[in-house]
Picture (cartoon, rainbow, N blue to C red):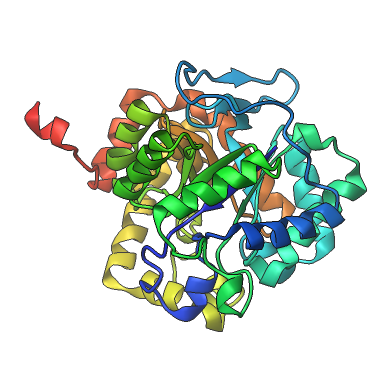
Length: 372
């Protein structure tokens, strides 16, 4: 299965240039889509649609567990596509922070643990991440029909005609472009990344008005310190139009891993020159407050018999509107640890969740909560 993730220029200028290039936003024209897909064909990871588009409604999100691996699976939004609750992302790592050999190790560990969702983007490592991912799949001989590959499109090339989603960069053109991609058999579903709830709703309305295909998911940042969008805005979209959440950065770029409790280690990502923004965030007053809260959460993790990162990932998964959480790992040990969050999920009782909320003190409230 191929899932294309599209995005507007929403928040493109909210950070510095380096972070912007690595952000999760992406869009493309049909021509750019064809060019990007061509790269996938050369490494044999694109398969034509195995069936017709499945309507988003009348399908409830039911969780199932694989007996062999213990991995859990959910529907992507209210579509018929089943994805592993944990996916493997390639941002920063593939083609950049790690070698191709380590990338293969990570994908093998994920695949053998039941992960069927692998996320990439044309901009990651200037296109290298896509190629590395495809080469590994080809080398391992994994059945393409057993995988769900999500990619994001926006910055394709340097020329004005090589980037962006459409000739007008408006939502109607985005929906038309993604419908074209699906009708041509290059993907089965499409979703959005870092879109506002209003933009997603507009895309859905346009799709219904012109008999086109609406998005099935939104990729959104979600972790202990970033909650508003996934917990307040997206649930309404899920219940109304079936759009699910595929979330990323469950450890807040490593902040929740515990490695920054006593400053910024020299070997950490925040020590790199291009991640100065992350270092500033960690050493800020807000960053220090976050570290205090993480220390307060450690006893909770100890009682549950897990690590703090496992608790943080399981906490993301306890949200019923979250279809899958994308993990980013730079070494096998880290990935194995984070995959262990699946075993912690059953322990996330309402009592534990309330205890975590009390420690964090940042639970967002919707209008419905205020009315009640």
